[in-house]
Image 1 (cartoon, one colour):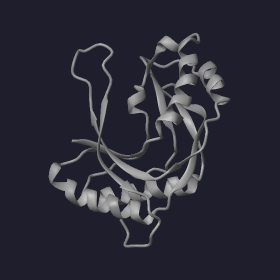
Image 2 (image 1 turned 45 degrees about the horizontal axis):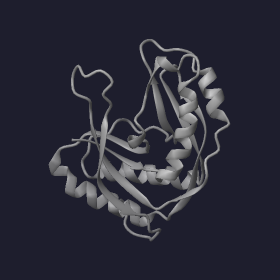
Image 3 (image 1 turned 90 degrees about the horizontal axis):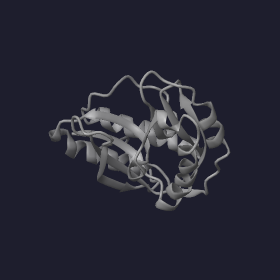
Image 4 (image 1 turned 180 degrees about the horizontal axis):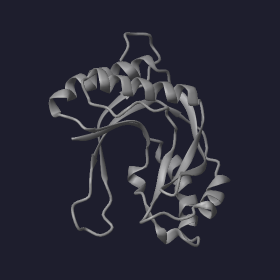
Length: 194
């Protein structure tokens, strides 16, 4: 199964972002993007890819430890940017140090559970709202519009393990579907490393 660890913003915060993304849809060039599905909006902490089901119990235990050791922390969706000419994203502000720590702990939990992870890269918090179709395009006007977005603050209180169901072959417009398969509360307690 295809898995990742994530922080899922609360519905009210996603609605705020949704109103801005609705405006982006009306800008010139917006039809050059495949817009991500709002029910799937999340902040990926550690992408695991395909994970053998027999690793799931150990992965769950280790993610639980990572959450147990991490305190709740404030975040807000804020501004935006792009990765080259490939993806448009909303940014994040708030306690980014704790968010990065939770991402590192999630990555370490997966590795220690035996998940074959990609090479470790520095974590960059973002929420992908669209991906460019084809060879790429200028995202400047979309980034400019997204740049003034200031979402309300919320407190991150849990770590989620999410399964990604990729679209079937040949179905136009179908998007990935996400299923939460585990959730652990952030408790901020000291404990063994995850």
